Length: 127
Image (tube, rainbow, N blue to C red; front, side, top):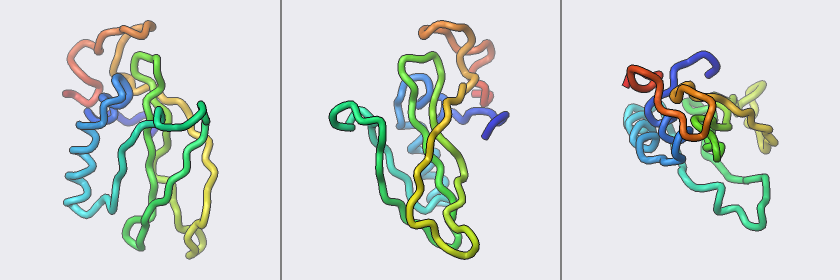
C-alpha cells in the first residue's frame, strides 16, 4: 500500500524480478490462512508483445481480496500492481474486472540510475 514499507519479497520482485522470497512470504501466509492461493509467473510469457494478461482466481467468503505485482524493467526498484482489490461487492462476486495497474517505487534502491545501490542500512523493510 502507498506509504508502506516494502517486504523483502516485494523488494526482490521490484529490483530483480525474482519471486522466490515473495513465494516464501505467500506460502507462510497461506499456511496461516490469510492467503487462499497464489500464483507466480512471467509476463515475458505473453505472446506477440501483448500488454494484457488474463487469469482466473479462486475466492471465498474469508478471502475476498486480490493483489498483484510485477517488475518494471529496466528500473532500479519499480513495480506495477495493486493490493487488496475487493472482489465481493454488494454481496455479489465480481465476474470480470479490467484493471489498469499503476507504477510504484519500492523505495529500496537509492539513486536515479538502473544500477543504483540499496539504501543505506539495508532494505526499506529493515532487512
